[in-house]
Every structure is written in structure tokens, then in C-alpha cells.
Image (cartoon, rainbow, N blue to C red; front, side, top):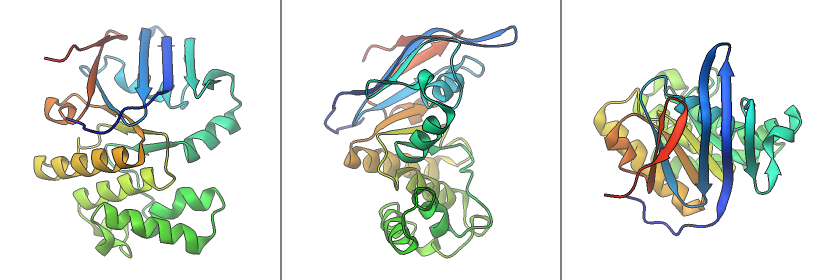
Length: 230
């Protein structure tokens, strides 16, 4: 469904293996993320798709295989380097938003910039722009508990995009929403990401959500397979 101009491979995982005790979550999984492209990672519960996302994002380290981000090997980075990468180069949208309840929506969106030592006034200026872009500027002064699920998820998308990341990881971003709000969140997420040239890794088990992607990869029993266009 995407219409943006595709760029170069910005993130590449090859031959990834990951086990948790006796459970083999990934077995020779691979994934390319292209700038300006939305790739849907699909599969049944327990197939390994979320483990693949966490490895690609540098949240967990695979037991084997390589992950290259702009020619840098994530597995060889120190924890501090990977944390900085997740804060500045990667954006995240989770199923339940995971906004900080004590902060206002504006402060939540500005938080990644503030953690990167951007001055408060400038961080809030950029956060306001993204709240406007995601059509939730009217909830800027409210806390997450005071807004609807759909509004909160759009705030989470604004937070993911505020640092102009190269890659956005969206793990079941509409899983807690009704179909109407889910469609709105996906439309705004895809349009905004393509506008900035970010690659999007969209983990989902719903065909209607995957329909927003440019390409679909299926994970089954820890292995990846690219679906051919119909």
C-alpha cells in the first residue's frame, strides 16, 4: 500500500539464531530494512517475530548471525552505544503505547530529545509539531491516563518519530485499538514515516494491518520467508 520512494538497505539481519533455554526462538532468520519502506513481519503467536524485532533493534543480542546498521555491527557495540542508537536512530511504537503516566503527552513526546540533551524549549517545539502532525495537539497538556487509547497511540507514534529516526519498530501497534482507531494510527504512522524516509518494521498478525506495508515477511518456527506479491 505504500507509495514512498525506496532507498538503500539501512538495517540488515542475517542468519539470526536465538534461544531462551531449550526454546529456539529464531533459527536462521534474516531481514532487510530499506529506508522509506514499510516491511510487515507476520506470523502466529510464538513464531519468533517479536524476538526478531528485538534482535534487529539491539534490545537483545542474537546467539549467532549478524546485524548491520549502516555498516556497523550491533552485536559488537557496547551496551551504551546500543542504548544511544535506540534513543536517537531508532523509534519504537508498542502495543500499549508505554507512555510515562506522570508526564503530559507533550512531555512524553519531547522525552527522547530531552534525554539527548536538547534544550527544553526546542524539544517541546519539535514535540508540538509532531503532535500536530499526528492530529493530537489538543491533548498536549493531558496525561496519558486522561486520553483515549487511539489518542495515546498517536502520541506514542509522535514520540517514536520526534528524533527523525532511520528505523521505526512497531510491535502490534494497533493490537489494543478498535478497527477505526487502528486504521487511523496506521495511516498516520505510514504517511509520517515515509515523509521522513524512515524504514518501518511492522510486527503484526493481522492482514488488515499488514496491508499498509510494501512487503511482507513471514516468520514460522523461527525462520523467515518473504511473501511474493500477489
